[in-house]
Image (tube, rainbow, N blue to C red; front, side, top):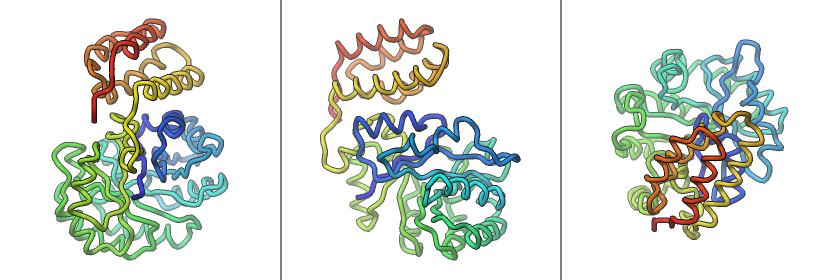
Length: 313
């Protein structure tokens, strides 16, 4: 089973990826949150830090590109190739309205003919391997019956399918019937993405789709950093491991960021997903949300790790 870490904007940056890799690992590929090319062709500070080879040592990292412009894609891919990357991923799944209204991410799926021309031009000139992470349409799963044949025309490294439409964002349940249709009709290796949060979730997926041997996970990992390890037959996270993971993450954010507010924003974001794994995590998450100073935050977290245990998952 191949396991991939999803690229979650603002969350799974290089600091999070390295802490996860150091403390738990379990992933065959770590996808870097999307690069959105600008008119000057330069990486933002965040994007440059994320793709620097020294920030991705020991892991197979894949940068993701968010654009509907051929030249922007090719220029960005060339720069990433210069950094040593062999593979890039095209984001055709982001459901954010600010992205979709510009015809990027999942919004690009609304213009299949334009998407076809884009892929034709990109594959003709790009020297790197290209994978695609996609939704199944904008409003109706049946849209994928038009989209998949377009993907089948090109030599994709692999196709990562999140079987929801854009308007659903992350609500409702994944459209497994559409994924089943894709399994039957895709000419590329498939990776499933969507709502894999426990070992039981994976077992259900494997029962229905025994031929699926590659899965991408995002929010499930934020809620249980040991999930990748567990899915490969390893042990659940211990309280000691979670403390180490937190400490590594917190120290790295403190080193890179300035100001209590900025640091605590990142930590509160982490605890939003992680707190349910602890016996009385909700009580401590309420306290953490009220923290305005790092010294207060450190006291609350110290108490949590002293008094709480990890729920069996």
